[in-house]
Length: 307
Image (cartoon, rainbow, N blue to C red; front, side, top):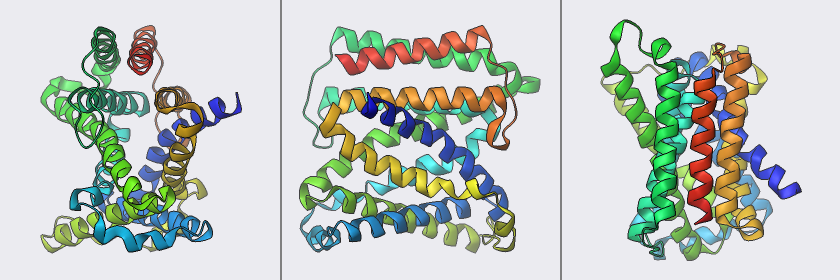
């Protein structure tokens, strides 16, 4: 029971992470700088944790790993930046729903085809039904909120944000599969998490440098960070906690249960954030259609995970 509750809380932290990063983006002056700062905080926390656990020396084994095993952190960079961009535009519920849908679709593809070192499972009828329910659920949620998301018929712009959300969600299972290979190389899960965040931080730092050189992104503003609410710094903590918790929970309650519970936690937290306008986000009423879409999405996730 305690581990179940912990998995739900850990999933909820992902919704908190995106809202906190939005505040960091506003203070820093842009999503790229905010993503770099947040990922840097997460990398520092995980590095300290790996040091305390006595496993940081496993980085000596990195030269023996396949080059693609080192790229898992790219998923975090995409996911976090997408969250900063989507939350103020689509709201917590729609954004998290898109992330979950992308995550489930990518997971089914990876498992069915046996990609990135994952054992091939084949396509089962229940998986097809579950995936269809997930897609139908997020379609219902987006359609129910579409009048507020795409005023004046800006459907093309809305479609672009939807595709970004799906792509960002897909990055998470791909990252998980790649990091699983690196974990097998290093035999040190916390160190893998720390290295993954370092790769993500370095990636966003390079993007920031390039965008600044092209005069498209200013340097992060440091002075406004002093006025950032304390919870605006929780993005890095939430991300680091999620990475470590997933590594620790999977051996205890199984991968399917962890994925299903963390997804449920994400959806429940986003419902509360939208309904009450928490974390300085606008209130978005929870209509019957939106709640039905969430229920359908979660039912599809459960069906996929139980097959």
